[in-house]
Amino acid sequence: MDSEVVSARPPALVVRNVSRRFGAKVAVDDISLEVPGGTFYGFLGPNGAGKSTTVRMLTGLLPPTQGDAWIEGRSILSEPVEAKRIIGVVPDQLALFDRLSLWEHLVFAAQIYGLPIADTERRAEDLLRLLDLWEDRGTYAVDASHGMRKKTALAMALIHRPRVLFLDEPFEGIDPIASRNVRDLLAQLARSGVTIFLTSHILEIIERLADRVAIIVNGRIARETSLQALRESGQSLEDAFVQAVGAPAERPELTWLG
Image (cartoon, rainbow, N blue to C red; front, side, top):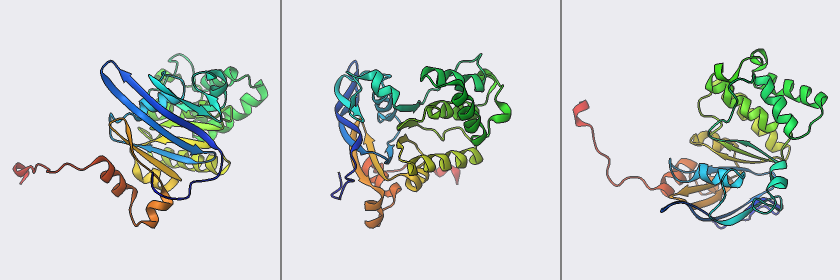
């Protein structure tokens, strides 16, 4: 971790010595980190570095091989139900039901959290209008585009007003207008005190929105810092990412292209 003053706010997420193995393969290797409450936290890394595996463990979709994590003090191992009540999740693989409409997905998600029907309908309409899905609310998931499905999953994750939000590549496959709407929504959530833990390959979005970032390489945290510290050092997020990941020593030239 870079030497800097870390927020005095109590942590919303604490990860201690978490690892995940699949047979002989170590996907996540003894990672530890803390995310202060209300922080917009970017979790970066190349393909196969362990980002999605980490998110699956932190959200209770995959048990860690070792270690534990706490979401606002609730252990993901010993208090999984309590932890899940306060989080929202948009996973990398969208688990939607083909024969439910976009509207029915939001109603279903709200029922899981016990929301009254009046609150459900008001929040579902607000979210669908905000994400430009209102006119398509009757579309079945099987007939929806990837972008529509992605935005529906985000609306489902938000309908119960989570205090901690996990987003795995939320901008993948959505058009520029929808991407801007989602960015604005996430910025609003961050200002309201929601803690956001986001993975993305789009460094420009992370650099614009995030307070802190961690870069994971080969299952281990290679660097953890604030964006303010990066800016003060004169380094861009792209520079930090390339430095942490390591650029290839030699790049082949395609001489045949002329």
